[in-house]
Image (cartoon, rainbow, N blue to C red; front, side, top):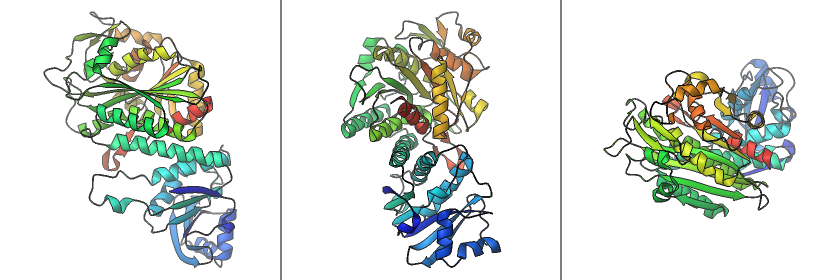
Length: 486
């Protein structure tokens, strides 16, 4: 789909025009222009109550005027002059849903008619471009009628003049779609080897460096904690490293680390059967890192960025790691594995040690780590932990800009004692209390040599139930964080 900008709706001819209508007060300039050229139809519809302009209400007007469009889509924005991010996302989602179901090849959206609280028009343009494209996403390839689901839109025009804002929104949406596609794939397709192959494809497409560490190489390095997670699986584990180099040759990189458990049965500490199918999403941390790499490669900022994926499949078998087993990490610390379903921290801890060789400026790991974080924050905020105040502030700022919410959680030293073990340096779980916090405390023991943050996305990476699917979060947050560092 070609996406471009236009300055004024009066200069555009498209199959479909999309304009925004408040429930009261003056129309935005574009809506007033359409109303004037359509013999006051929009005003009449609002005055008579046929179209009240409620938030995300839509009404298609075919044949308004062949001079400028085959049809006009009216989209309500309510009575407030400025929308919240949540209201605006709902409005844009309604636009995308309508466009997907209509047979129009070219669409022009009067995006200047949307005004968001505490946001510049450039920010609005970025978000509209991103959210529209995300609304067009379909998971394809596994149903007979998939070809019918593809959008018919070939050209999408947005009102505005900021090409950079449009580029950020478009690239972020591409990254989000990539992350969602990986997350939605079934576990029999998306294996650690599959993720390794996708890294190689990205390397070829964007000319970035890719290194794949197989099990023999990880064994040589002493990454026995990561390897322990995949012992019960027939699928080999990998540590995947991708290097984007847009900065100076000697400049240290910013690093993103993704948890890539491509399916999590819980291992010997087997999960209950209901909803276990959703454990294909346990690699969404890795998926978000892949998506961010794609967005960064599209935008080509001037910075050095390394993406690391710790990929394994957690299965029960006669070879599987058992509760009570003790393994040695790459750092030299030993871990008593009290619960094999607390496996994400086991693959991440060795990866955090491996990352030391890059002498990174910052490290952010992203993981669907704990159900406790879902209990604490639900599906609204991702949980954030950090050992560096400046990094925490930067991530919160990027979160606001990207409308991709995070909430800082505590990392107090007092929680560390819950991880004490009688038999090893550290236990991999800390009991039922503060489960998300103690998981972050575990990781913090392996991230002491650089500024580090941990994002627990267990509640935000996917949606369950009838709307089941990967969300693509936090690709937007991570992309804006890295762009701010360029």
